[in-house]
Length: 266
Image (cartoon, rainbow, N blue to C red; front, side, top):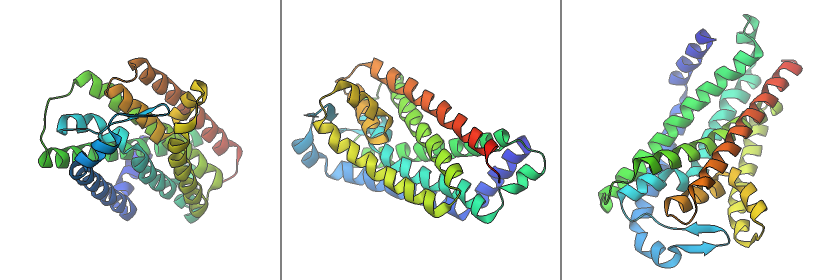
């Protein structure tokens, strides 16, 4: 398995799609940093701390606050980029037939899945760090740093947001293993991204606390809840709820993916 992981990381360094997605991530993070900074006064005047049916919308006012909010605010975008790369990494190999190569040398299908998942975990972490760093640096350069945020709050908000993202990665890996077609996988991913955006709008009209809690597994709605905790309008227990729910989904999606790999011919 270690040899396959090394080979996968080598392929990652040589992958054009990886560098294209990486450049898009840097570009979008920089763009959003500029937009949030230049439109701060307007957005704050129109949306500052509005209660929108369960979500509190707030804007960071300095670099320190942006450090806390960069990932939760951009979670849907990061999810889309990682999801597309997941489709290329997994479905692309099924399309090309390369998926048979590691299995032909005796690697188990569970090891094959874990290798792919670890690579996607590394890519996701890289994309999230770039998003946070680029957005914060641009925002700070235009406005100022302000007060250094509480490191415990940063760790808990970043960790919870990252778990939401990894739950999506596990879901998209499952979709890729089920469809085994790059076009179909990307089509489903785009549909899911649209659903994620719609959920954040519908959430304004949902009155049931139970239904609202279920939407936290979606990146935009989950990121909004993390933002509420950052601004003190929700409790830290909400982060624990989202984290536990995300871990449960990661395990469930992974188990189904492994079973799918083991039951179906390749």
